Length: 455
Image (cartoon, rainbow, N blue to C red; front, top):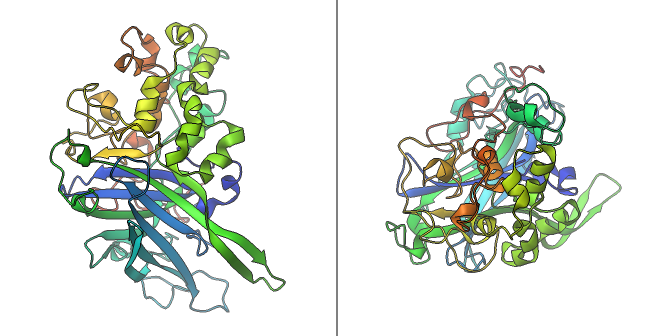
């Protein structure tokens, strides 16, 4: 969660598991957009001797739809290669790693970046170095310098990074999956306990990140630099995916052969979509489908399960939500079409009638000088669901939307329950031990195994 271990099959394949996708106008480089896709959920920092890494056998992709038809127009592909400098040691490193070419660093990853535009593939960079994992002060004493050296400026104009980062998603996993027992409101729960502060279940855990920063003009359908928020050309839809070869054969001598076309095994656009909207028996199937086919999942968006559970687990707290029986048109707009003009003053990220789970970003809306972690619910038009920034409290935003706070946008006859505008798991970015960065790739320094206490 937001898409950590969200489906039965992908939970068994962490290197291909999308955890989060971000898309935002770069706050320190206003003519550019930053796209981030994270994989490998819940990395324990002290994960040696086989520290976490991208899969050499996985095709990682970040997709962009820039004309609103739900089909992909631009894709950035990342493919990795792992090499051993010394296969006769069991160690990831045999001494301090002072650079990306240090002979002490034994197991290394490099990658290529390919752009596919309208079916035409162009290799933009090859043999790009990823940084090592953050092992500890003896092995990686100046980790930030290693990570900075792994930021690559491509000749085509994009900036890329691929490597370990601190997980930037914050959520009280322990309470959410314990019958939605939100600690700040558990005194109102069907099994009441004294209210208390939230606990970030992902604190001190890492992920593996692919990030790309590129001029807005590279994303628009006509190469323009968007300045008008009302112009449909200012809006792009983004999602990330992971694919594996159709057939994998394990040989008798630990050799592995792969055959056939790439098959999508994981995808993610809006946070929490597969996690809490799609039912358990359909999650693996959802991961295999392209967003343009999401009409088949419409009923789960129109009648989601979470509102029913809120009513059940918090008796008497959500009476208006309990009585509401219309299809949730507000959630369809937020998650499947984007929000049309005229609903929220000064804002739209509508991509048309094609129903597709995409993270929709209006690139003509500049970053806020004082970002509100509640995004548009907090009056900040640069925040989720206008794309997604690393600071956005997407759990609280979506929980309040599911609780009914956004229904009046499309149905003025509905009055949200008082609880719907305050319900939360009680967390903020301060719940993350490693702070966000002010510049690319924005996610914080990964936690090291040596410095990561078990309690």
